[in-house]
Amino acid sequence: MKSIRLLVAALSLATSFAFAAPPPAYVVIDNSASILMDQPTAESLWKGQTSAKFQRLYPMKRWGFVSEVEGGFDDAKNCVVTARAMMLPRSGKALLYRPAKTATAFGIHEGATQQQCRAFANAKLKEAINAVGSALIAE
Image (cartoon, rainbow, N blue to C red; front, side, top):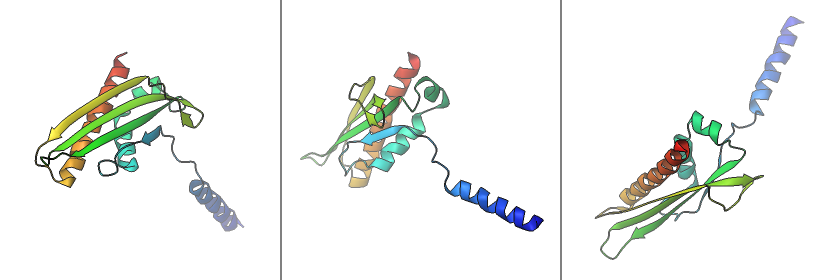
């Protein structure tokens, strides 16, 4: 009888882990050129830059982020990138386009390959995200 109770308890515990809600996260929308940035990469960059202090000051239920990375190669085969990071207020599950903070980073990488240009775009978006985060923490 005890073994049946233990089995039922173990199964209910395993079931609760299977149906547990995913950990909360900020809403991140990526409006970037697909050759330079994708949604999972943008989300991971934002997630890596939000500290516990930042999350206390700007709760996930009230704020979200938008990233925009544009650019590509010019006639001289240089990689040109502009990355913009914005923090927007939430209204339910949607973001309202009233940026609380915006930062832009841009640059040129001469003689870059497609992979190097993508890595350069990641670095520029990270730079813009850092600027947004440090401006908000400093306030």
